[in-house]
Length: 302
Length: 266
Image 1 (cartoon, rainbow over the protein chains, first blue to last red):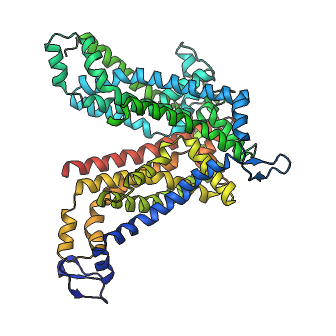
Image 2: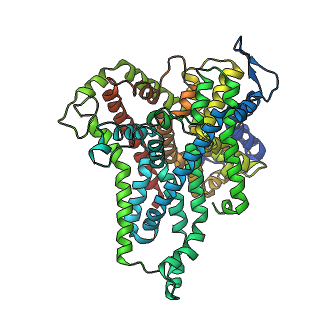
């Protein structure tokens, strides 16, 4: 920095006019840490105050309870909420149901995504590939609620599903699994496609030239290279299903998932501590899942 | 590996079949907005614009639309400022805890929606003791919109490199002058793209919104959810759903065009 001429009173001059800068600006130029802390302070303050504090408070609230008479929050430490979760059959059933739906959705999505991603990455022409990527990406951004609503319409009495003669499963868990698989399919296709794109064609050709039949190439060369992509897609669909409770409201009939219990307890039942405790279940499930996957080493390549 | 023509055909049929199925339900909703049958039986027998007229006259839907636009606009504004500051800090500097900050930005959309929702609901009502209102929705939306701006700006900064900024500083421009005349103009389309994605994300969000909306402030998705189960409102809900499709697809389409236009010129 060659700036030596002090120019305090003037507005910042156009860059071409020579080495002039305000003292504040010169100070900032010299002090990297000052620039960095000015940049970071506002966004970090927001994220920490709004989000980190809220998450910490959620954990603390789950250890409080609600006075049954005054329905005020009683701020003494207790594990009662978690005892309720373990002992009460309703919570166990809903947890098992939520995990079951999330597993079913994940398996279905991976099974559908694999051939599509393979076609996109290895069979389609580059032009068609670009079009297909856009075709997969666009519905990602179409309103989530509208997509669920559209399945309510399709599966309704006298709706499209009945008209085609396939019949509608009606509103229930099957409809929830169909709708959620539909919602999260693009999130599973994209990482698998990205992983496949990185598999060099020459590798497949070499295996073919050496006499490996197609099924063997898929099993011993493509699949091992695909594992990180599949794991990433599976984590997306599993986590998104665990966190969603609107779908089951709209197409699930009378069924409930964990999110519904959180919502009811935060709202109508006015028991924030219990709602906070229930919200810990998806967090713990996701943490256990991620730790288990990390053990296998599949996360390192995402 | 050589695939037989049959295998290729089967793969093509699966791919195009499934992608067709992805668009089918949305097309059904669009078609049903002019379906004369109130219970939306398929196939439609004729065309009517009655539901569009009723939707245009629905005060509830109009108020919800205004609320949604307000929330999305303010949340996008906050996200633009905070996301840009963060992107510059993380892309141009290295410091202790950088990875944690990176993780923190992604966390609100990575954690299950219910968790983010109840955490903010509990924070506002249980801890701070404030009533839910339009502003609590804005704060929640801004928090998870930061990441879209952040991603776009960070990608642009990475491509830009620092040579122009360095040259500007060498020629004597101050920190703010360089930002105003060199950095900001190069970021413009990234900010526009990130801002539009943030807007679409906020306009569309429902799970976190159900936990943070209150005081009569209903966004359009909440209005749809509240009216979906009323049989006589169903066709109007359908029309609003079509409006929502347009509002979420158009900005994203524009944003993609914007980022695509700039990419070859790097």
